[in-house]
Length: 194
Image 1 (cartoon, rainbow, N blue to C red):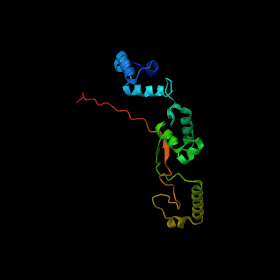
Image 2: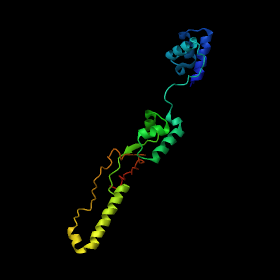
Image 3: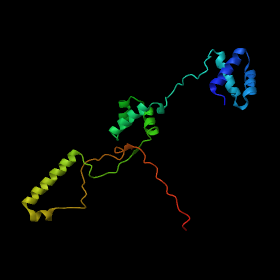
Image 4: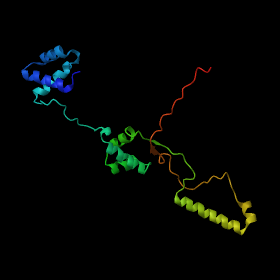
């Protein structure tokens, strides 16, 4: 198989020899057959050589660098996310110095993370709620010590569900980044035992 550098060096040689595009393509096709570059490629490289670009290698590509090439950047992003799983793009961007699009690509394409919503669990109380619960319990104990017989007759209970007068975080606010679970193993069926 003919590699790019070999093909370009032959194209350059035939160009410097003074051949036109058709002659170059026909000579290469006669020697290499199906492995030779296409006519369009010959035209493009002949045009490059005529404009003074005599290098046989490709020019460096301008654009977004590959994420896979920069593992340090991926590790830095994972460290920021693992520090706080509820990180938002607005928090991650300043800490890493990346644009929104690059940060999004790293999170979703490289470590393959996605956001999932946590279920609401009543025992996740903020310190103020814990203190309020403690204060109410102390008040109830004081009332119980004063009048034990009448206390239970006046106590109203339901299904032991605590209801607080505060606005809990929304489902959107509780989303966390995590890696997807590994695929489940499939068990084969034994069809011979019928």
